[in-house]
Length: 454
Image (cartoon, rainbow, N blue to C red; front, top):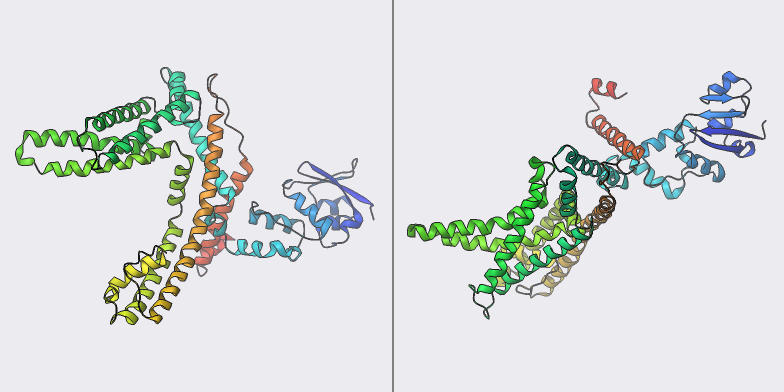
C-alpha cells in the first residue's frame, strides 16, 4: 500500500496519507489505494500522471475542502451558503455517505433537501447576490447608453450626480439641499393648519412655491439626462417625484376653472383634497435614504409573510370577538354585538389598548388576557421573517451603493466589477432543479413528465 497519494482536484493539489484514507475504505480516494493498473485507476479518476504519480479529478475545487475535512475528522459539515444539490452530488461522487453528516448540520441538510423552496423563501445570500448582479448589470447597461449620445460624457456625469446622492461631493450637496427643501415644505404645510397662523399666510405660500419650483427643476433635470426615457417613469422613485408636484399644478388649473365658471364652484372641494395629498412628498426621502428603499423592497417581497400575519390576526379576532360577545353581551354595552367585539379584539391583539371598551367580568378579563398574549405571539412570528428580509435587502442596498460610488466613467466605460459568476450560475441551477422537483411532486401520476425528469 502506498504511504501517501498526490491528488489534483481542479487545480487544488494535496498530498494525503494512506492511513487516513483507509479509515473509510468505501470512499473513492480509499479505493485508489488498491488499484494496480492504469485502467483501474482511470475508472476512479479523470487522469493519471505516472511521472508525478498524481491523480487528477475534474471536480469543483471549492467543495473539496469539505471532503478533506471529512477525512481529517470523520464528520461532514455543510455551510448555509452552499447549494444543497451540488453538495449532495459532490459527496456522492466521492463515495461519502450522508450518514457521516454531523448532528449540527444533519437536520438543516435534510430539511433543505426535502423543501427546495426554503432557500428562496428565506431570502438566502445567494439569492441576494443574484439580484445584486442583475441590478449592477442594469446600472452599467444604462451608463453605457451615453457613449452613443451627444455630449454623452457630460450627461452621464449629471445623471450619476442626480440619481446617486453619495456619488460625489456635488451630489451630496444637492441631496442635502433637496432634503432641506422637502422638510421645509412639509413643515409649512403642517404649520398652516395651526390656529396661530392663517391658512393664506404669504410666507407659507412662498415656501410652497419655492419647493415646487425646486422639485419641478429636479424632475425635469433627471428626465433630460435619463438614459432611457421609456423606462424613466417605470421607476418608483421617479413616479414619486411626479406625484409630489402634480397636485400643485392640478390645484392651479382647478382654481382657474372655478373662478372662470361659477357653476363649477364645487371643484374647490377637489382642490382642497389635492392640497392634502402634498403629504406624500415625504416619500421623496426614499431617494436619499437607504433604509426607506430597503423597507420598500422588503414590503414588496414579503407579501406572503404579510398575508400570513393578516390571516393569523383575522382568525384571532374572529375567535376572541365571539368569546367576548358571549361573556359580556348582557353586562357590557361596548360588547353587545360581534362586530363591536371585532374592534375590541383588534385593539387588544395588536396591544394598542385604547381602553374605550373593556370587559367587566372575571371571565371576560381572563379572555382579554389570553387575547393579548395570543396577539403578541401572532404578531412576533411573521415579523421575525420580515425583519430578516429587511436586513438582507439593507445589506444588499449598501453593497450596491458602494459599487456605484466607486464607478469611474471619465475615461470611457470600464469593465463591470467582478461578480462571483459561479454562485450566480449555481443559484440559477438550484432554482431550476427546485422547480423540476416541485413539478414531479405535484404530478407523480404523469408518466411522460416523470420520464422526462429522469
